[in-house]
Image 1: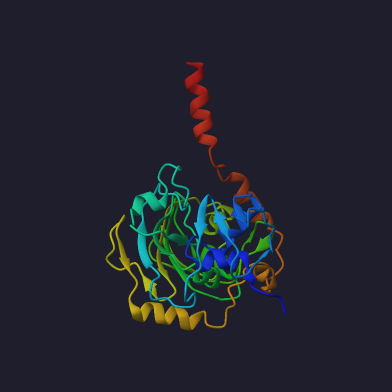
Image 2: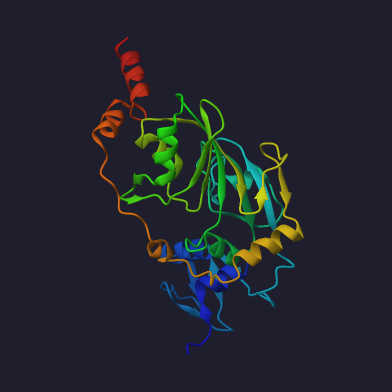
Length: 288
């Protein structure tokens, strides 16, 4: 049995960042252990001196206790970026202005809005994000043209994007241009890409629920602390997770990507590419 714990877990348990962010810091050469640059997988043992991004990392007396951890729900406005890098304009940390160090659990892209959780508990971040822990995330989505039952059915069954096929999901219409969708995964810009595949453009995307936490009456830019009951429910849902992120996403059994039908290919060809109208407009301006 190996001595100590993985360095990324030690950094995460301190509340400095999540394990994934700790791995990134290690890979980027931003971590020192006993004045040496560690490799991914390096282990920490009591007495080691650790610095991350220039800050001394100290272990907590009871790393498993959540009593001194922060857990908040935030209604992210559009144009706020989910990054802890405070030199980025519009970063989520500066937008919230929380007095203690926190970091987001997952992300919402810059042009999306709605519920996101933030915490100082690096271990819970990884447990929630693990792909094998099937956790609901609910969204309200508005698109640029009328919906139909065929679109809803095909979205629910899985859509080929990013070299894979999305998992089946729950989806239903909320109006002529709006639908509600519940996902259990989080591929990059997933909903937008799914809609684009069928020739739709997302004009508004709002997340309204993560697991048992709902956005409720939080206004854009407002936050609230999670209740003890909400945190207990989250802990129960992730109790069998080790928190070791890595290859779990690949273990999910996914349907193989389907080749688009002739009709779907035609729709995709007709759909305007992102930025095409803007480029054309700018080109005309230059000619003038």
